Length: 252
Image 1: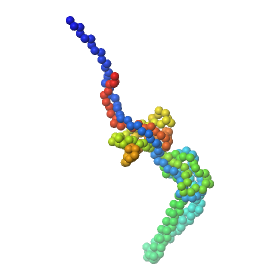
Image 2: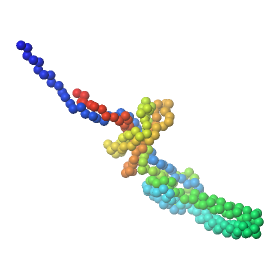
Image 3: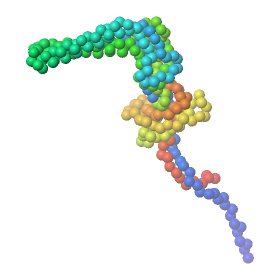
Image 4: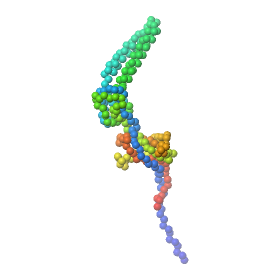
């Protein structure tokens, strides 16, 4: 008889469910969540500095005081005039209620009180211009002035950055536009920290596509609790889209 064919050896493998994702790679530049260059709004001499290079400051904290002796004297005078005008107004108001004072006199005292209060507000505004305060909490940069320096409007005093969260702007080819949306996760790395990865998510997509490069600017946010990331750093970014699971076996 004919001998039976030997069994054919096969390779088997366990089918596994593995997560899959599409990846988009791009380069991006970091920006602070909020950033401002602090300058003076008046020409005056610096009298006191309340910060040094790299200090962390709170929102509303006074950073620079300028010479304001004249304004303080005017402020005391304006407050005294307001107090006197209020007294005169109340006195005439009581007489007018009793019918022993004319309406024209009452109107005159009312006008004087309003004028005194307006002058007080104007002096307080000029005085506040001589105090430079932090508009938000953050870290200041290098100090560019010293006590006694004469500063003018536009002179850079220092910079202030809110680095609790970093913005990451990157240009992505418009062919991926349909899959870009807020909430899309990403991983960012930089040569400064080697293989360390920073995670974040897309916060917004620009409303226009660049007609030259055919790319769209995508903005992401990266938490920065340890304050390792700095504005201006270059980041290699991997966007993770269409997250899903699939059944797979080894290709072999």
